[in-house]
Length: 298
Image (cartoon, rainbow, N blue to C red; front, side, top):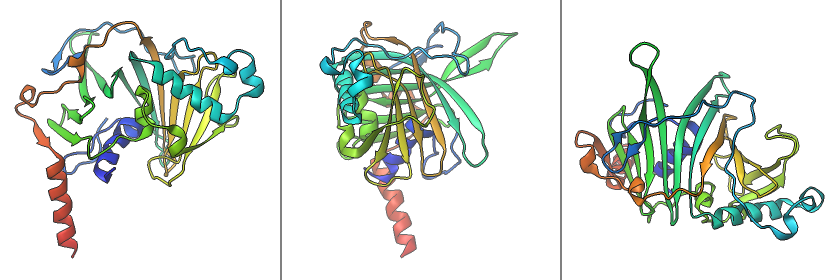
């Protein structure tokens, strides 16, 4: 996977902010629903966000786990068995819609930022992550808008940033998404990319939860450790926490899941015609930018 794609996956899982286009670099930036592909803002009524420290509602789904079920989990479960059960859970899911809250902690300055959004997943290989922003309009009313989106139709990934009016387009045939993302829709093997251990010291999750500590087998600046907080009754992921090479912490909590409502494929389609005034950055632009930098360094 190229460094270009890695940087945008870092956005999705690590920062919730978007780097600017290569020709105009800037520092990273971070309830209506955007209707694909026209990106029209609609009205959405959202429940209050969870308060800090309160138990979050999580992605729940029934899963028969045989010997891993019930009280035997606490007594006999191993990290590898938990990883297998988690992957089986997501392999059995056909679609899901959920809201998420993301808290990012900067290790250097101790600063915390919070992002809220909504995620849609549909097999095979389709995902959409919308990030919301609330702005005051009149009086105490706030208008909720989508400020950026990750849209994958399984073949292409589109990173749509409305504030900077740009779209990054990546061909996923040449740039595969990491398994830390693809396992959400049942692809990839966490055991192939990570060493797994059961964690009891991080403090993540509730007392009754299982916590997996995943360490990448190949050293990465994006992942020092990935923690998955898991409900041991069915092995769904309630929370994911990424600690990067600099010690920054990115904490995702999922809530208000819906596994029954059909997810239309239109949510994963993107038309460049819907954003005629946006700059489109493609694979070719990335290659030209890299070649230009290489030639100047020679």
